[in-house]
Structures are given as structure tokens and as C-alpha cells.
Length: 169
Image (cartoon, rainbow, N blue to C red; front, side, top):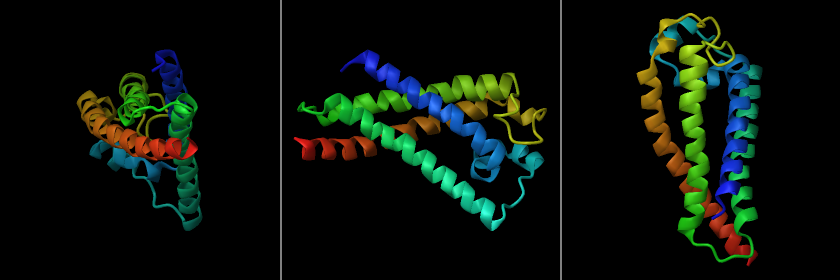
């Protein structure tokens, strides 16, 4: 495993998430409000989207996840094509990328941008001064849940990548 490659890919993947998040929060808040504390959601009072806005939100989310998850497959294929990598090696590779994002999400996005700085592009509209945005524990619990989710995502895309790599040999 090439650690420099994995760290570069983790940086790219994390930066893409950091770019996608504020668009979701500011343009399609209904797609992400569930990731905020209850009191923040009440203050934000995110309006129910129109059918068109909901369709655009779904399209944005679908394209975003297609790019993000497609990149995981591309990263694995580029790194292991022409080799006989083990399933475990691919899993560790993708798991590091996924967990790097989870750490960036906790420390940079949640604790720095939301809790400490209340950076408006990362908090729900109308909640910039909301006390609930300072809930470090809430975000840490989200990190723990995210660790499980990222492990599952890494496993799913390891299976897909491993299968594709087998076909390419």
C-alpha cells in the first residue's frame, strides 16, 4: 500500500465533501437538516421544499454521491489494477479514505466551522447564533455513528472494486 497515494486520495475525497456540504446546507437544507441537533432544527424551521426544489435536491445529492462513491472505485482500480490485491488490502485503503473524511468532518466541519466559528455556510440558515450549534458532544456522537457508516461504505465499495478488478485481470 502506498501511504502517500492513500493520503492524497483522502485529502481529495474530504475536500469534495467540504465543497458539497455547504451547497446542501444553504441550497437544499431539507437534505441535511437531520444531521443537526433537535433545537437547531426547530429554530431553522426548514420549509418543506416544492416539488421542483425537492427534485433538484435529489438530483444534486445523487450526482454528489455518484462522484464521491465513484471516486472510491476509481481510487481502488488505479492503485491495484494489474495486481492481485487481497480484499483486505483494498478495504484498508478505502477505509482510511472514508475515515479521514469522518475525522475532517468532526474536527474541521463540526467542531471548527459549526461549533467554534458558526461559519454560516455550514450551519442551517437562521441558526448562526443558536446555542445548539455549540454542542460538541452531539457532533462526537455523530462521528461515532459516522465511523460505522464509513466502515460499511468502505466495505461495500471494496466489494464492488474487488469485483471490477477481478474482471479486469
